[in-house]
Amino acid sequence: LGKQGVWFHERAWQQLADSEMLGLAIPEEYGGAGMGLTELCLLLQQVGRTVAPIPAMETLVSTALPIAEFGTPEQKDRFLSGIAQGRIMLTPALVDTGSRDPLRPAAVAETDGDGWRVTGELTNVSYVDLADRILVPARTGSGDTVVLLVDPRSEGVRLGEQRGTNGQPLWLVDLRGALVEEGDVLARPDRGAKVLRYVVDRTTLAICAVEYGIAEQALY
Image (cartoon, rainbow, N blue to C red):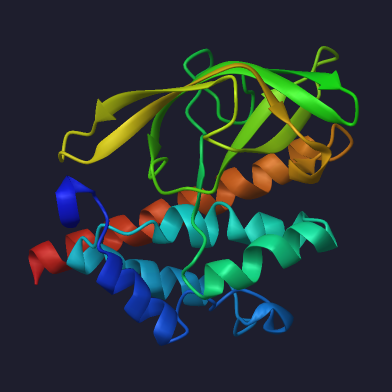
């Protein structure tokens, strides 16, 4: 635990930034090393070994990778360099209280001008208190999927405190018509399902890498 009980080791995060580890899979034009998922999994294995309270999986895999792969040039400019430098943290909300399948979200998104309004309830979301944006998948009225970057401080977002079995602070994210501007739409209906599968597959692999590191240290 960091200062004032925050579940975040600020010094470890900054040291990873200073050693250019946070930018392993971020393209070189945004201050990263331009590597890939394999290198990130090796990093996550070490995060698991030390049980480090940092949002490495959430920021580097679940959100930075899809932004680098599918984001607009403006989104890449806005987020990727800051992630590599340790200034920006993002987190995904993939556990929907209304659906057991992360590929079939129950949260609902309705168009509002060029943006969307999203309503739903996401549970067990980590590092919301530090996150600049929450990656939220939602379904449209036609049954398609959109992937949105929700500002946790925006109107229509309510946060409820939760706690993991290991004591980690988690959050219930209650969205009540929260507005997502056009610039924070990561995937529109034409490719939302593809982007969500990309996120879920890589997040699943990242969880395995962290758990492998935990088990490896426990058996060492």
